[in-house]
Length: 156
Image (cartoon, rainbow, N blue to C red; front, side):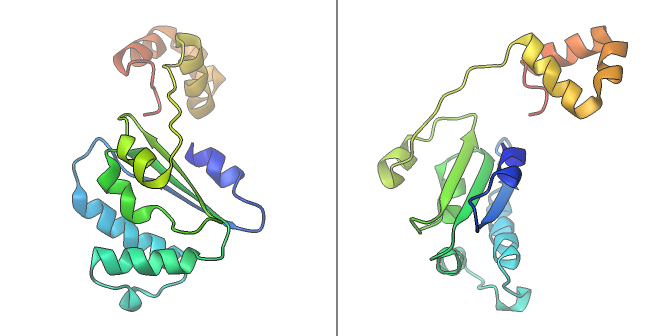
């Protein structure tokens, strides 16, 4: 998903991809990520507000009037992404998660899209994209074990 966003951001706008480390309960990570987002938008580190609410407000004001695709990949829960959702109608947020996030539907009008697991063949093709065809073909038993051990999500 992050790779897609890097390729397909809105015309004339920017892209802000991030991997949220959703399976890790690391609340301070969102705070650090907010700082990184602000720096990516041109805010010098000394000018970054100290509180999360102030950072979120500055972040949203910097996005106002801009066309930006924000990709929040592997969200643990809604509280993790809420400060990073743009407030501008010109922006789009794509949020991926292994968990359902129903309160984002109610609060932001999010449109959930549930995806099933890839087939074993599709999972193998994901590994081919990362490892290369030669390496995957050279170790079919190891590839099958990787795919089985990670529940057909070899890149997660």
